[in-house]
Length: 430
Ligand code: SF4
Ligand code: SF4
Image (cartoon, rainbow, N blue to C red):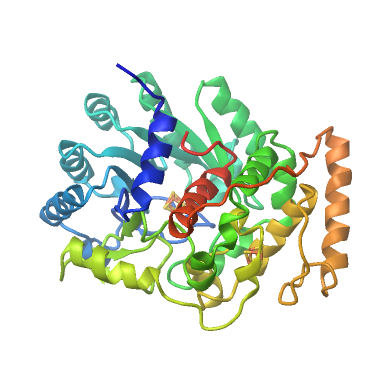
């Protein structure tokens, strides 16, 4: 019998089924309540928020939705929060999903993991568990989470999962508080034999508060972190090489959304509202009032096909495949899906200039040759090149080989999947 790696299986399935718009990947925010109060968090609510708990989907409602998505072809399910274990009945929800055969990933902060929960997960194994670290030292961790004792509880959770040989991955988020400990966290994770990744793109909160941006790094600091991880810049270059042509396809440039959301994936918030992704807050379909099929086939299809109302610089941007700006985060930060985020644009152009990717002038883009901020961003890029030299980092160069041409919509989706992976500095579909 022929066998293939999981990565190959996943890549081939995504590419084949995206053409048919099968909802392969589901993300369920089971609760926005959380025992921590992280400064950078985009959606957390206090654990004792009774009004929020009352609105959350019931176990029976989950059973019905799981039946419907299984019938529609969903294979991967991600449970996230808030904190998934904030719900006392989370293991019941999880078991219902397991019984339907989904490949399940759990995002948790680890602080509520008990021996009983770890034993249960060992018996009903998830596909993966990802815990976010908020610092290498107790002081940093609890400065970000604002909860005394949370560092110890997180480490206790990690120990319980590792003792049971569960498929754990660790990750962190680059902030003004954690930035000096990211590589210590990586080294610690590697000493445990656990994969590690990080990301530094923060969004405003879903309730419109801009408070997470108070701990966001500058674009220059974000790109300097790329320099210090030998896997990251090559991963960005590979992504750009692969999808540079795809990002120019007409389908992609004319729709407001240009990602895989609503094509091969969707999200459901704790209150049963389905959307293109967890960050998309406006185009939502109430699964309590209608069926998954109606939400997916009619509502999200229409949402996904919304056309742009005006020319924007992103439409002709050759480096869109690497960019952190998208309709959902634009909406959160700028109140408008079509207004790109300057922070993401600057990060992306810095990466492109460091990678020696040739960029055409673009009258709508401030960072292009001949535009108002070109000299300024070139000065930052030069400083980062100097920093790379000091660190002994060889900057990868842009491939000049001819690039593949992809069909439009599946290409956009594949770009989005790989972008999400590359933003953490790992190879796609790992
Ligand atoms: S642990 Fe996660 S959900 Fe909870 S406050 Fe921190 S970032 Fe938000
Ligand atoms: S780099 Fe700038 S122009 Fe290009 S896609 Fe991102 S926000 Fe738009």
